[in-house]
Image (cartoon, rainbow, N blue to C red):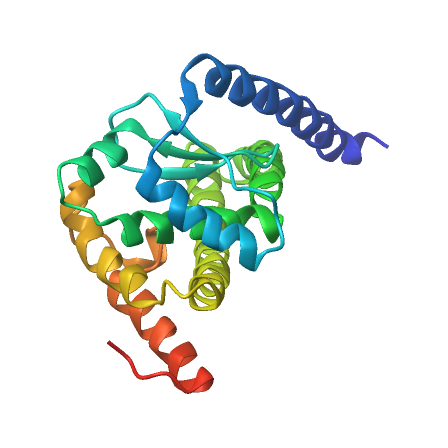
Length: 229
């Protein structure tokens, strides 16, 4: 029984971390967000809502400066104030912003938002269990190896989710008559908008490389019989 103790402790830790993380996330978003009220963007989200047979798509502004969009575990969609300011200044078009909203809708529809919270908790549990085991086998290096392995796992899972959300967004944008071109043009802008230019290997990044995401979209276009832009 004792040999299973680290695993049982890790599972209990994961469950506790999931509940704490979900509570903290909801509290943070509630305190720092308001509903987006933008007529031009509403016109586009209404088109997407019609394509999804929904009454409306609610989008919230999250009052932080980093350029980002996110989907909460409870299904809410958020655009950061920093991202919205890029749109207001003309650096991002309304259609490109709509592609961000479509992408986050994809995360919600495909269950990624809740799964990511569970994955985060599970990865912490795996990290804890690995540290317990590896620290005994390789004193001094066990913690380093455990952290590296769980980080690689997290990055791989996140990249898979991004490709799936991209495909969902592409289908929704096409069905809404907005098209995939804004999605691709935004991808080409993202590094500049977020200040994330760098040489980090793709397998260590939580998001796929820009050219790989654009290529994946163009393969979808070719399959659907639309010309790449």
